[in-house]
Amino acid sequence: MNRLESTLIIPRQIAEVWDFFSSPANLEKITPPSMNFKILTPLPAKMYEGLLIGYKVSPYPFMRVGWVTEISRIRENEYFIDEQRKGPYSIWHHEHHFKVVETGVEMKDILYYSMPAGFLGQWIEKLLVARRVRQIFEFREKKVKELFPAR
Image 1 (spheres, rainbow, N blue to C red):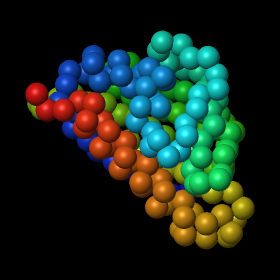
Image 2 (cartoon, one colour):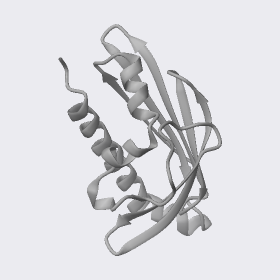
Image 3 (cartoon, rainbow, N blue to C red):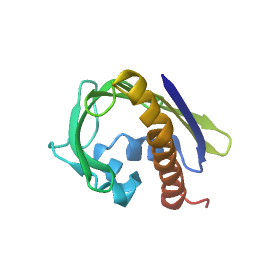
C-alpha cells in the first residue's frame, strides 16, 4: 500500500476553511483542469457521512474513468474521510484533517492507496501513478494558496 502525506497552513479561520472543504462542489476547483473532472451525482450544500459522489475523471489523456467515493466519516471542523467505492484503485482512503494553529488552519491530507492487478499494478503505480498522484496534490496545494492568500 502507498502513502502520501501533505500539510498546508491556510491563513484563515476554521469556519471559512471548513465551509469550503466540506462543500463537495468545491472539489472541482482544486482538481487540475487536465483531469476533466465532472461530478455526475446531485450534490448537497454540505457533505455528510454516507454521501456517495459519482464522477468521471481523465487521469491521463485519452483515458476516462468512472469513480464513486463515499464520505465515510466526518467530525465537523476536525476531519473527514473519503473512500473509493468504485474506481481504478483497489484501495483509496483519503483523510482530510484540520487543526487550528496560531497562523490559521493546518490542513493535513493523508492518502493510502493501492493499485489492483498484483505485480503489474505495482509496476504501473511506480511507473506512472505515484507521480500523477503527487502532481494532483501539488496542484491542489498551489490552488488552495491562490484561493486563500495571506492577508
